Image (cartoon, rainbow, N blue to C red; front, side, top):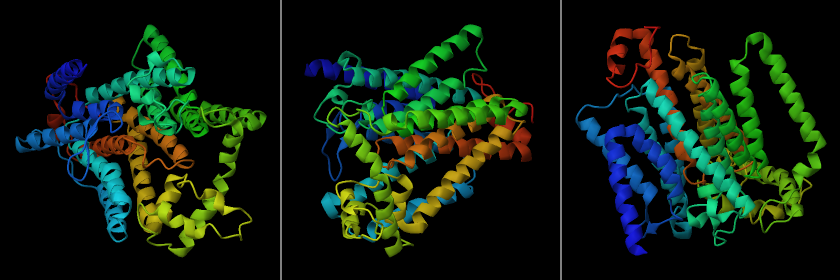
Length: 470
């Protein structure tokens, strides 16, 4: 058995090396997002120094090595640092200060580990992705890889819920050893929210192919969309369903003629509200996890106001800098005795914060959550400008719409779950942000130096990103 694993590993290294050589930095980034999601810490880890070595971390190291090698030989396409990058650096700076100005060594240096693995590593990927050469064909490669990866995630989610274990791989996904969320479509992330956000991104990527393909291609896109939508359903997570609905409304709504846009979007919103009202009780309480009853699901919904109340008390105590990054589960217990809200806050004791923005607010204060929200808004503003720029090629414009759909899913899920400690999710967030920022910088250069941009983007095998506007 060990010989077979060694053989498979050798073959993977060989073909991975060929792919990295032929596909460049983009291939390295996509490998990190896909293979890195499947082969993280639960799949394999080797203790080495202060942190274990895992395959996803090795893939990031390979991407950084690629970046440095291409930088040395002048094969990158560096973009000027803009306000978005300064916001990102400011946010990471707040996290670093918040971490090391508090007890970062608690529980085997857990706060420092959260900082490095869930924020600093995505920052490294951001810098690599933003400065790589990007073409129109590269965007189609991203959407193609995401669509294929979505097929894997959807089949895995269906297999998990239906207990068709032969469909579920790697094996750790189907292991009861990882008991949390067992019985739902949690995928290689071992978290249904993470799987749902990735699946939504894959579903939106599939939609991007619609205007490019013919009649039979559109039929394939429709069938693939149904499969990915089924995968989203089998996460059995309400926020994922809402994220899919909102992403769909954005993609469809902005592709409709203006005269039809608001009537269609309004009717869709009304239909969604009616469905929610009619099936409200069922949505609040239904069997999800294998070891969780329907009543437990209903109780989890009732906990949301309690989490908000705890967050409010913590915010009022330390509004500017918070209690320290990674310190929530050690500090929130001191606020559970408060009774002025008319709720039993003690129920929140076993849980972490269930909201990305409230988690940052309580731990890093207004300074941290403010810079993070400003960063997301800056990326969305860049995406909106891409979508409205008629001088860009269709793929670059579509990326703006795609990013807005992805961000809708991310924000909706972030309002009901703390998404930051989900494996590889911040990698996806920062990678998409890097592509958006890179395209925005290239579009700005298109207006000021059209001839220089045309020379930069010319390739023997790949079309230029910007065309007629030059």
